[in-house]
Length: 189
Picture 1 (cartoon, rainbow, N blue to C red):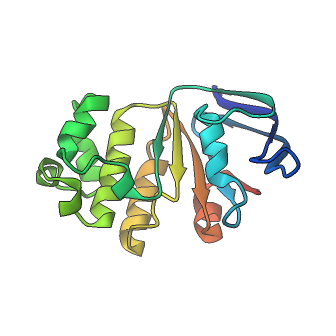
Picture 2: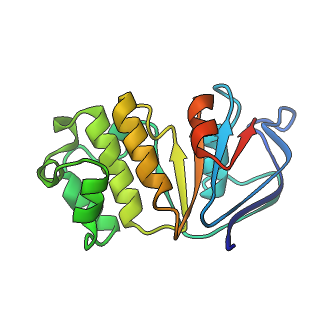
């Protein structure tokens, strides 16, 4: 299997004497789903910031393949003044859009609207659509289904799990049941 993420001996904290990560290592291959579970403040979202190189570790190495991220808050993921379709087309080709729209149960017409005109669940599915259209090797999901009802949550996670041929998923969640159901490995931090 192709390795798409490798974190070796990572040490990081916002203050030198209080480490969120001390000699932390994880790797992920294409076709795998790993879940990071932990309480608020444990460093789950910080780990994504480190992987995306928005933060610099004190020590250790991080190497990752091309990645896309789905944030927990869909309203902060889109600019309020532009249609969803414009924002998706800014970062990804839309050749495969119709097939993915059907998979995530989202109408094309909704993409012609501004973000505030959609529900949180619809907007989160648009975030997932954008990330999938970017064709990443690594998909970073930060509580991606928290804005969705249980039925849509199951549909979206099933769709993501059925499309693991070309990518791997690193999932942050508070939901241990969801993590156990969909992940090959659950890492508690």
